[in-house]
Image (tube, rainbow, N blue to C red; front, side):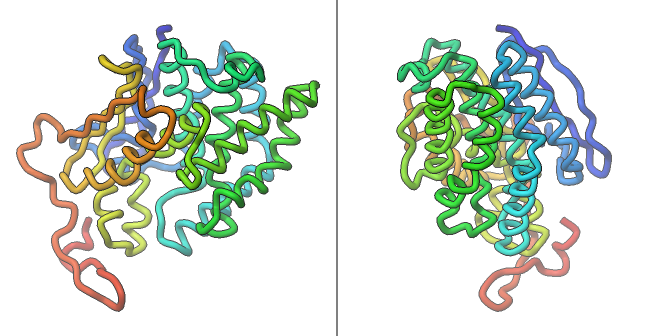
Length: 327
């Protein structure tokens, strides 16, 4: 299936410029991924959400139940508040990167790109294998599970998976009741969604293909735009520095496997982010047989781009030295 994909190019200090590009290779560039010599740090969060929303709606055009579920979810005031509070706790209190609305939309779009490539390759998910639903239902399960996976962070990062399951229950009851009149079917589909939420961080490991898609989609949201907030708030460690080294993540049809995830770095420190975040989520999910990961520097890069110039120890951690605060 040929589809239009949305690509975001953001120049330093300028508003996001959204452009459409036909991509018969089914290539998907995660929202917020810049191009060489471009930085998405100044990207307004609304632009990222708009781009992801367009990609999601484009993917869901053939699937009315999934589209209806998406529209209900994104208009649900409880869901919106959950995303905001999850982000407040993770960013403001813990110094982590974005776990709110932007992350929900970006990973939601990535999950549909992954699902489509798997279906194209003849890989059947557990919704289909169990007889609980059709392809339309599979899209709904993957999208809702992915978009709600991090809402438990509003309670605490520790145990956020289980908290997310509890918090998602009333939201899913409202959304699924509007889409499915059959109580048994919506109960089965809800089970798949809750499994995805509970297993997205590999504790416990996902047992379903749909749960694996949510976990891997979560792992693709690692570009520097997402990590900048934590860095700006003073979190100076290998996690934040490596996050600033990831320029672009692309999901496309693979040569040897159905899916190729290509990560472009401006600094070799980015390999830590790839190994600790993305690779773990591929290796420890049912997607391990279907995904290749390729991490590399841009072709025109002759040396690693410097992320920081100097830091100094202050209290229990490092902070930027004065000469580096221009970054």
